[in-house]
Every structure is written in structure tokens, then in C-alpha cells.
Length: 396
Image 1 (cartoon, rainbow, N blue to C red):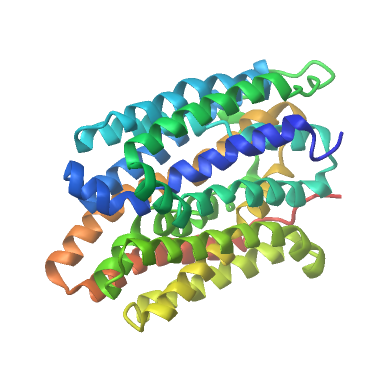
Image 2: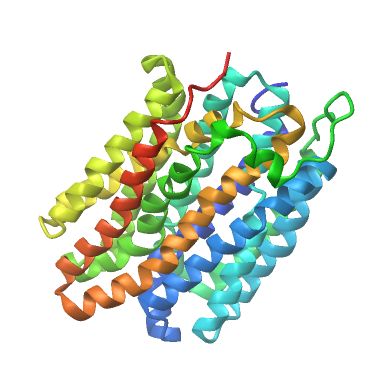
């Protein structure tokens, strides 16, 4: 099966929307504050609800993938939750409307990545998984770019409500394209019992990779999608245009990082060792932000971009975790791993609200954001150390 079939392309477009919706609040911060009275804490809650709704849906998505296949699972949820959530957002008149909209968007986007991953896991050789997974995430990360400076330009030209109405129509169109183009993989041969969480948790090889799943993506996702804008605005005095360009740089780095993960594995010669290198790089960058939050706009933008680049190890983690899953547990297994990852982002975003509120009450902006960066750094360091206990992947 060709990697770039029409079905895979339609699913990649759905994942592009998923990346866009999880990140676009960063550049909407000033306009939502001015027009709806939404504070950074409000938007942290809205963004966290996207990730929590996304995570809660992962096991139902896994059941849907195993039972109905990716075509119907992705198309139905993207149409109902994605287009529906964008519509609610366009009609928002108060911060709580944004909470409802973002929760709906999280539901709609919940199968966007797992649909193509399910196809890759079922129809392609295991050794190709990390490259294909990085490719789909890299392509989808264009949504991060569209949610940066280009979104600022569109909002300035058309207004944020008109932009959200257009996004609702676009999301519905992509859902229709998925329904028309995706071909579901054949069901596994043989008589297998239905998968369950208990069966997945009995796979001991997964135990020490789960903590890193929980916190690996949290730093880059939360900073890109939520904290980059207030950090640049409050610590470095950036305006909306500068924030848009800085988050664009971070988005471009995320795209580049995801396309580099496959070649990186081949260069290093070992999947587990490559994950350790990417995670160690993220730890180093987060430590620099913690120690030098006010060292200058240029360094801040560079460090944010490097977080996007080094934080692209998620497809590698998924490839490692997928290598331990038997065929009849692929759907529920990959969505369970994704639930840990996205759930970690949501929970850490929720927890970042009181950290931010307490730090801003006690410290000037630079010190407050230093404390926030430390909050993301510590769990990542713990997950990194525990990951050393995970066995090598079987991807031959």
C-alpha cells in the first residue's frame, strides 16, 4: 500500500486540523482577552479541556478503530466534534463558551492521529513505523504553522469570528473527504479475544515507558499552545505580530523535527537510544529557559524553537510502544498510549494554572515564568530516568 494514498492524505489533513486546534489559542490570547475578558488562566483551562477531552476519548476511539475501522471513526468524530466545536467557538460570548468549544474540538480531533497510526501498524512493516509516524506528525504539524503568524494575518483581515466559521466549514469538508477516501485495513486473522486495558497493562515492557509518554509532549505542547504568548508578551514586551512570528518559528521547528526522526533512528542505529537523545536535548533546553528566562528576545525565540525541534520524539515513543503490542491489541493499544501522552498534556496544563497564578502573585514576570518552566522540567527528568528501564524495541 503506498504511504501517500488518497486515504492517508485525507487523514493527514485531519491531523493538521488537530495540530491547529490544539495550538491556535496562543495567538488568540490578546483578542479573546479584549473582546471576551478571557484571562491566561481561562485559556489555560480551555486548552486543558481540549487535551482532557481528547485523552478521555482515546479508549472509545481504540474500540471504534478495532470494531468499525478508521474511516467511520475519524469521519464521524471530526464532523460532529470538530466542526461542531469550531461553530460553538465562533458563537462564543463568554470564557465558558470557549471551554465548551475546546472540549468539543478535543473530541473531534481525538481519532485524527490514531487513524493513520492504526493503518501503519496493521499494513506496514514494524521497521517502517517510526518513519511513517514521523511523516504524518511532520505533515500535520503544518497546523502549528497555520496557527501562528498566518492565523494572525487572517484574523486581522477578516476577524476572529469569521475565521472560526470558515474553519468549521473546512473541518466538515475534511471529514467528508476522509469518509470518501479512506480504506479500512482487513481484520486480523484468527480468533482473538476483544482487547482490554487490563490486557495492555499486563504487557510489562510498557510499564517504564508510560511515565515518559505522560510528560514528553507536555512541555512543547503546553508552551507552544498556551504559554508562549504570555511569556513573550510579559517578559519580553512582544506584540501580536512578534508573537505570531515566534510561534511560527516554533511550529517550523516542530515540523522539521518530526521529519527528522526517521533519519535520526537510521543514523543512530537504535530506536531507544534516539529517544534518549531527543529527550535529553529537550531537558537541556528547558533547563536553559528555567535558568535564563529574561536573557533576551532572540535567545527566547531560539529556545522555543529548539523545544519544538527536540520535542518531536513522540513518534519514536509510539513506535517503541507499538512494538510490544500484539495484532489484536493494536487499536486499543496505540490509543491507550496516546491517552497517556495527551492526558499528561491536559493534566499538566490544568496544574500549570495555579503554578502560574501563585508565581505571578509572588514574583516579577521573568521569575514567575522561570518557575513555570521548572514545573514542566521536573516530571520530564523523572520520565527520562525511568525510561532507561524500558527494554529495546523489536522492530525488525
